[in-house]
Amino acid sequence: MMRVSNIFLTVDIVLFKKQNTATKVLLIKRKNEPFKDCWALPGGFVDQDEDLHAAALRELEEETSIKLTALKQLGAFGTPKRDPRSHVVSVAYFAYVATDTTAVAQDDAKDVAWFDLENLPEIAFDHADILKLACSRYL
Picture 1 (spheres, rainbow, N blue to C red):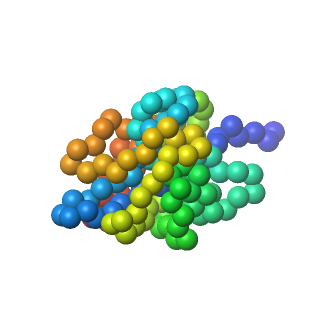
Picture 2: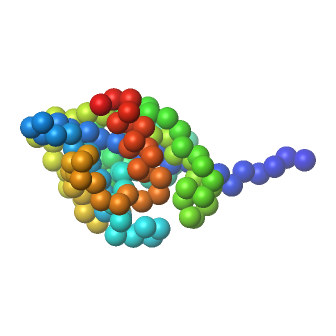
Picture 3: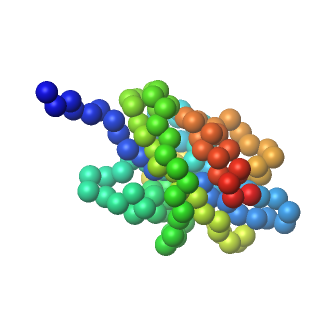
């Protein structure tokens, strides 16, 4: 008997920039539930027949207006219940951008801001774990 999977696939993006001596990370304020009005990493669902890397670049641009051509894959995060909607596995990516990179909230992002790693707000989903792994590997 074949089992049908109800697992969904998303991408999340950790974007760093240096500003003076501080390292900043880009977060979006979510426009929709779950975690409406909470800060989170940019990202979203992978479309049918879409490449993971392409999905990450698309989601980043759709939510923040930042257009990149390359991201590095950080890892996969699939703990059940990491997303209250269903079992969702996320493939996380990261990149450094230029100090003068600006972002504009678009799509399902209500706001967007660069946060000092030493002064982060509470972050939705398991995005704090994703950010912690990125910091341990690349800072």
